[in-house]
Structures are given as structure tokens and as C-alpha cells.
Image (tube, rainbow, N blue to C red):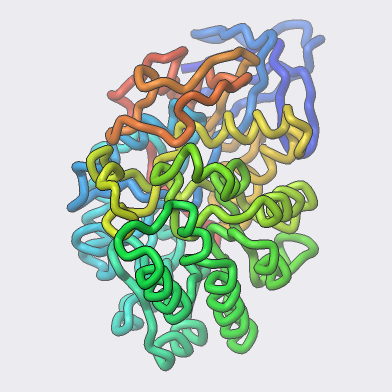
Length: 445
């Protein structure tokens, strides 16, 4: 089927240009000037006037909780929320039940994705203290990368054996994506705050328990190992100014150590614990405004390589346990990440072109995603139409299975109108086509 989007402002590769765009089945067939004398005949024509057309967002870090934790979320529900937010491709983490640490569990996840995901999908293989043979046997032209927990979080996949870490960095055949928080520091902080507050630790203390020191110490260790062995390291969810000093700069293609920042570390600061409390309890923690502001500047300068979500839902009941130590860390974000980044662009923190670069182009380049992440002829038609419109996040428009969002009550000034996945109009002004299935991501490596 041929679909023609006319008179639309295309934001792509550092430019904003008014064009027509032709989709033919699953591909971008042509990008045409506005003065094209005879437009191609199309089965469907969409008027893009007053809207921006962006490449589909590629989120390199989500937790969709399937299998084993589906009371929180599942691939069907969260991929629906993703496409409603303009996210057309995701890379999902291994801390499920069972953990994705064998070829069998990895294959099973891909089968689940093919059966139920509305978006394009890939799944990480998780590193453990004893599965290096699995890590080195994976076909990384079809798998996004290796996930390493150098700090414990949901699922407790901590890799803390020094010999294993060295062997992994020396032998890793693909990009290592790392959760970095120093366990020794965190445990000492926990004991100190337990002595001070017993079970009544205030929520804002999360920023001191999972501290800037804990993050930097672990990230520095990972960076040192990567430099020693020449490994390709991508440090996930950076939350401190100091960690930025560990990253390589220059052309993305030449960087060996890169970093990701998540939308919540750009949006919130520790002042927000006063009103948001457990709803913004993440690992790593939301920290002081000076860290948030440094991360914002690193996005604008390009030192940060990727903006993602670490989408990690828990049920309302789990988040409402009231006790700091019994309340899990994590929150959902894929439905609201793009509009939040566009909101911050409107605030003057960066440009629309920067948003597209960080959320679409750079994830595709960094992971080598084949034929996605750009609006180019011959690329997959993963596209998002956005209009300027004022709306508020409320329970009745939240699509996450958990039914809540840390952005509830926030007023945004951009709205995702339509989302195409492989040329299929999956989301159309509030309506989802749940019959569509995304494709397995492939990687040019």
C-alpha cells in the first residue's frame, strides 16, 4: 500500500524542511519537494500541515517485565504505550523471571515479541558470574547487546566476581551496556540511614543512599576495564555530573565509551521528592539539580550519546507500600518520553533537531540498527507525526498496564498524532491497531 504524507515539516539529520513523503508498503519510497508538479498516486493521503514528521524513537533501555512479572507489565501493553508515545523500536532488559541469561530464554523472549509486540523489538542477553560461554555464542547481528549489572536492582543480577568482569570485558564480542552503582557504598549508606531513621527513611534520602559517589565509583571501574581491554562500553542511565568525565567525545563512530541519560534524570531533581515521593524512586536515584543541569548541558553539547527511558513499571500497590525499603525502584516512561523531550526543547534546553538526534539517529548509529532511525529513502517507514497541542497526563489517557505515571498532572504542549511502524499506521489519534506486529531489529555489525 502506498501512503503519501503531504506538506509536512520533516525534522531529520539536523534540518527542518517542508516536504512530501511517500511510503510504499514498509519502506520510505521518496522524499519530495513541495513544488513537485505531479505527486505520486497513493492509496492513502495524509495532510501533514501544521505537524512535524520525525523518525520513530529507538529506546535502548526498557523493562517490559515479561515473562514472570506480568502483573506489572507485558510486551503487548507496554509496546502499545510505546507506539502511542512515538517509540517504534525498543531494546528490552534481561531481569525477568526467568532471567534472560541463556540461549533458550533469549529465544523464548523473541518468540513472545513476535507474537505480541506492536513495536519493533530486540532483547539483551544478560551477563552473570558464570555464563561467559553463552555471551560469546550469541549472534549479535540479531541481538542488541550484553547487559551487565555492576549494581543490584530489580531482579538482582549483580555481577561482582572480579575475574568474571575482567574476562567479560576482554572477550565481549558486542557492546556492553552497564548499570553502574557500587554495592559496597550503597550497603554502607543503607546501614547508616537505618540507624538514623529505622524503617522511616524519608524518600529524599534515596539520593544519598544510592549516591553520586556510588554511581561514579562503579562507572569509573567499568570505564577502566573497558579501556584496559579495548571493550565497547555504554554506561546506562547516567545520573551525575562526575560520570560525564568518563565518556569519550568526538565523532560517535570513534567513541569506545559512551553514555545514556534517561528522561527522568533530565526532568526531575531531588527537590521533587517532596511532592512525588516514591513515584520517582529510581535506581540510579534522582539527584541534586546541579547533576540534572550538567546532564542537560551534555545532551545539548552532544557528549551524551543516547536519551532513553529505563521504562520500569511496578503496580500501584507495590509503589504504595509506604516503607522506603519495601518499595521497589522504577517507573514507566515510554508513552511520555518523546513529548517530555519536546517540551524541554520548547523550554529552550535544546532544539527539536537535538531531540531527534539523541532519540532516533544516535541509538541507530551506536547499536548499528539496520535501516532505521533516519528518514531516508529505502529505510523502514518508522515515523511519528507530532502536532503542537496542549494536553495533560491523566489516568484516563495512560496506557501502561500499571495504570500510573510519574508525569501525571504534567501539561505538555506537543502531542503524538500518528505513529507508523514498518509503514503500518499503528497509532492514529488515540486509536491503536492491535493487529499489527513489529519486527525483530537487525544490526549491521
